[in-house]
Length: 328
Image (cartoon, rainbow, N blue to C red; front, top):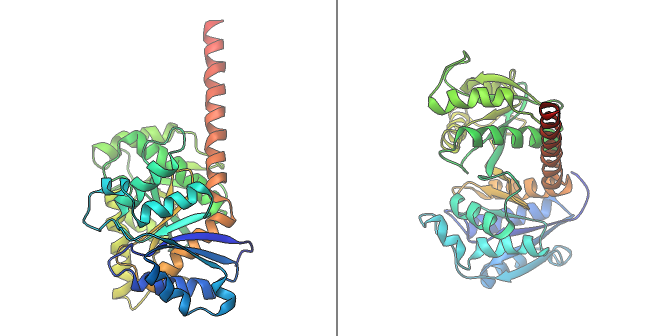
């Protein structure tokens, strides 16, 4: 476990089976990580239930922000504009009370609250949810898994940049190989969006020494031999992720080194945000809290943003130089 204090705001009311599974998951995370501090965002009586099960040394690492309102799983994402547990958790990150936040509530509401409360990075119009799968040949970063359901080709190209930087920073993957998910590897395969995105990615400058390897197929996500980062739209990525989880269940459980993640990091906002499945169980919530702590300790948000800023600066310099040459 990486050293360093991590203060994580936890949405106690987010998820299908909240608050019971969130309380259980937070307890597991606290007991597993002696440097973890939690800010429990939700009703006081729910927070008190969790605190009562901790020993005195653990209790001093827990604070409470009383909030009673919640954005329901069926609510429109715009409901995140009102005061609620997910909005209060985002506010805690913005104000510096917490280093990161975790919610198993509605994905759209969490993304909306994060964008409104933390702001987007420059040149990022649509943030992406990124998950890491334990493929046969090593971890594979998959994005988007639910943030942007119908992105344009330019958004997919930008998400490739995000995914490459994340793979390098969060998972120490050198020179990540980036692929675009389609129905075949031959040029011209796929729907209109994929056909338009392929040439954009071929010309895209990728950070961390990453390179675009072209189109990949579904089995490349679980094998990992061809690509370290796989880019797709949020609709397809979410369906694929849940299908892999179901396949693990049919096979008797996930591989020994870990199964399909039940939490994803939100990239493109100015803060560390982790989103768990709405159907998350206690172990999934604990894993989401551990992921948030890992990303904070690695300074992943800052480092990914810095990689993007460096590439943007280089592109601006190149464009300036090109202009000078053309007009001389």
